[in-house]
Length: 98
Image (cartoon, rainbow, N blue to C red; front, side, top):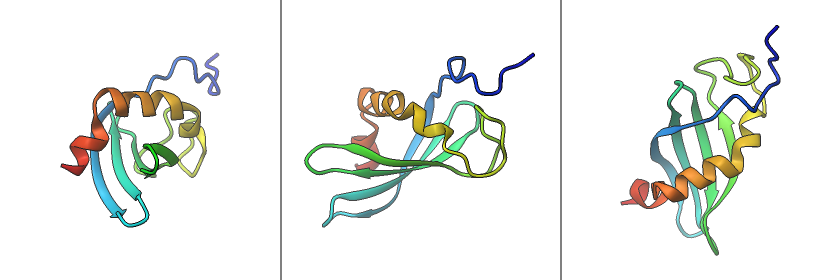
């Protein structure tokens, strides 16, 4: 039987990261992030004093790859560190702003 709450088997992989909006004066940014499995998310970030993710929300275009719900869930929040690591490793903040 498949355990739908098993987050250990899910590994998000960012394939696209684009700027969706910003308030440069406040250092606030919104990005659209696409994952390899087709999941799309909005990522809200703050730049000061360094880049941090303040919120990750899955867009309701496909069911959640973790809990398989097709409505709002908080599953992507548990991948905060992993996603932030990929963003930094691939320099996605810098590329999206250039």
